[in-house]
Image (cartoon, rainbow, N blue to C red; front, side, top):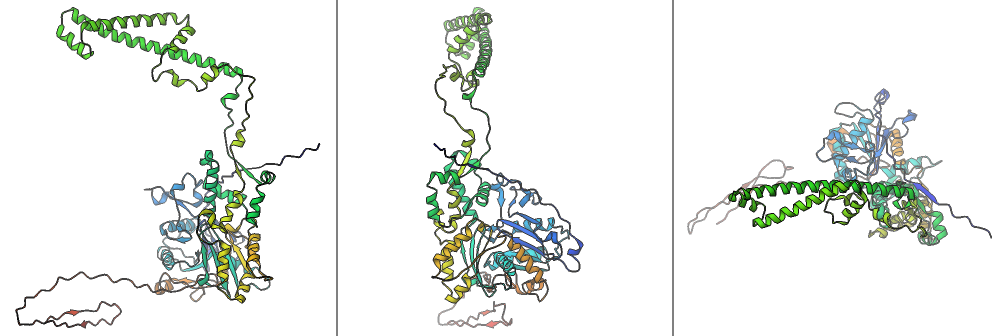
Length: 625
């Protein structure tokens, strides 16, 4: 009879990677002469990437700094004690102290953003006092609010005195970078599906420019998937709550999860025990290899019993000596009171009886006899303890013990060792290593699925493909054909295996019969935004009349919310927000006494409060009778 081989278990362990601190780079002279080299900063909500847009330096063609967009500072600590990004070796002990500059994907905490900028400029070697002489290329969220851009421009121009700033959308930079690599003719129309740490976006691009009116955002991304996976495993393994941390869940998502082409069909496969044993990932947790007490040998058990008996003998002997000493001291005191009665000092004798809480001399005599008997018995036990230790120990053990006696020092398995052993009883085997394993099965595909079905986590909104269908429905059939011919996937949350196949399957069911579409994935979904911003900075050097750059003069003349548009930027829609005029203090009412049959003329002169007027006052005359 042929035997079938058992399926091989896939056992993994958590890396728990601790990032080393970022080094401090030196500033090369060619970065300042003849013109300052721009600094490219991909300000992501999960990770920040910064580097130089240097055309000739091959070693600087990738971002020099990559760190988490978080800061940790204790309450009341100095600014210099703040830890940024990779300076935090382990996020979990300090997670309650972590602060980010983002609310979802929009920068709102500019105090933390200033600390991030300080960290970047210092590690890139910029040590100029009070100013940064390099232009800045910075990414921002799609359809970024004007107030947030105004605060960012104010921070860069007023605090760092940068000469030029350019803003662009991270996923459009990635679209720009991958399109320029296409030969022979890059496509300028397409639709971008981007999913990051906090949000996912659908951005249609028409003729090389963002169609901001039809952009849509889905509030489901990587952070929601990590939180969902943490809840699932904590409910599944309540004994390992401290080991199921958010950092480990992010590692599970990045390295062990995948997207199913057909979710329901894939879930049916997991019903098979053979498929489960083959595909489940077992995450091994650290544990101690110390054997439990039931696995010791007979010799070890006998030695342990002898040690515990010797310890109990010492405890009992010490207790007897202490009790004998206490009884002797009390007996001496009672005999001293009895001597007062024999000497005729009745006043002192009665006061001593009251202190002893006794009523008469007969009661005193009774207590003295009892204590004398107890002291005599205690001395006899001490005399016979050397010859009959075991017997006295048993007799002492049978007496009730006070609180705090040697029972607290006994091991919990002492009485189990005293029981007769049953050698014929089969002991159940206990696998300590398997007990400390997390079986990650259907969670591998359930967590990425929330991008397409947000209802799995209780979010009442459309999934990514439903939102895409809604956006496509706002265009003509000809425009839809042009958009779906270039569906571009980018963002760190798009790196799941099978994501491209899932998008193609959904588009095939969504589009009309025999229609054509093309789905492409970014070459480096998490890094192409920085590379695209670097390519754009190299092709569009900063200058007064350069497209996409905001100078200090533009900032002062047009306001902090001003945006110079380019192929990877948002659409600038200026909005005039009327500032409220401060209310004037109320004037006391004018009262005049008027006699009957007479009339009074009251002339009120008011001046114009409109600052845009020519400055002339207007006279308003009111006549009351």
